[in-house]
Image (cartoon, rainbow over all chains, first blue to last red; front, side, top):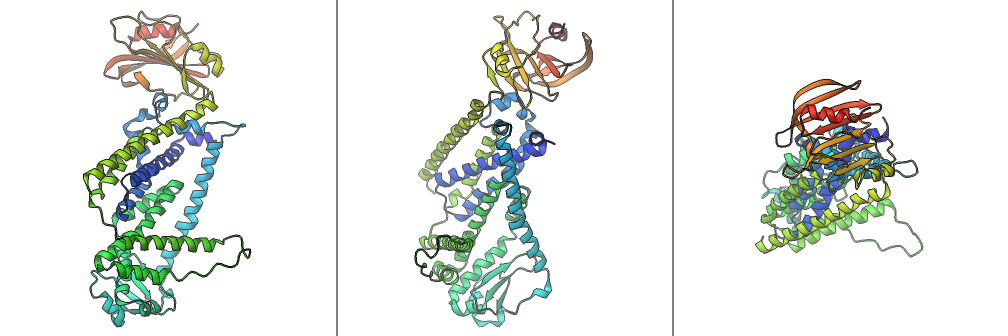
Length: 331
Length: 180
């Protein structure tokens, strides 16, 4: 099958239209975030998930209810027709078509190597009992026991012997929170409670059907770069959602801020003299990006931004309607 | 959330969407400037033929009472495959205006232009000999349950289709006048 033949087939039309639908949905979502100045992380996350979820269904739904959407007359009257750009010919080639194939291929590879393979590897490792760590159940550790007293629905919490500052959770059937012994010694009782409450929120939310469903739909759109980016933005918001959960449970915003500072923001090393290096390594860029992310979480917590219950569903619902209506005219 | 903020949010959102639609429309027009073979409307028949270089377009020499040459609208494309759509509006005063006859031809059998006269329900289908060709005649309804007929046949490497709010007998006369 030729390239243009593929783009005229059902899978080709689906992939192309899903890409443009998610692109438009992403712009609409961004307009909504700015228009209503949405800061609530839960609402932001819902809005970011719209370009991930909605385009999965739009093309088949439109095709089912309005088969004439493919007709020449309909295409002429649309807001944007992808076929015009795909059909553009330059020097005997179709540059837009080729570019789109390249983008779809790179995105699929990113999904495979950065998401699918690590998840499968993690699943197989967590199912392997031979890779256990030296851990102590929290009732045996007095500091953890004191910190946990006021937390509801606590999953298994273990202290791991380690000199590094670590706290993480595993999800699934044997969900648990792991804290390193050095962190237990460093954090105050309130800070430890906040940090564990944050991890508990991850465990609780990992069972959230909406998030599980969103991930499965995201996997169906493995080729779509817009979906890849929007899903990652939604995942970033997850940390802030869990921060809010921790604050609502512990009622101690300050303690979580301090815990985040101690955990993730060691004092920055002074930059080396000029001329010693010109290029930043990938690791340095990643560290800097991580630091910025933590600083943004801290500044959010410190500003004490209120929940805005009025826009909890209004903004996502409005964005969904706008995305469906606009994308009807994007073919 | 106060009402003022919500209302302002809606206004800003609507303005943002309007800008997005305008930008998309502008982007949609760019390929038409770069590539003259893309589907578009033409002012007249000769302009379409010279612009796309389509040599042979079958046209009728007979028109029923309310229709006349030239077509009131022409849409055509040179790629991904050549296709021409001709629209004819009723010209007689007092009768229902709007497109009453469409003639389209394309090298692709699956070409379906849709538009103002798409046939919504076929009541009867028959094969009909048309000057040595085998044509398929459909009688059914278009749009708001208005009776209409369609006839379609393959002429060399092109599929020719006529769709009209006419009796099958009148439509066949138009189709026969397109062939020698």
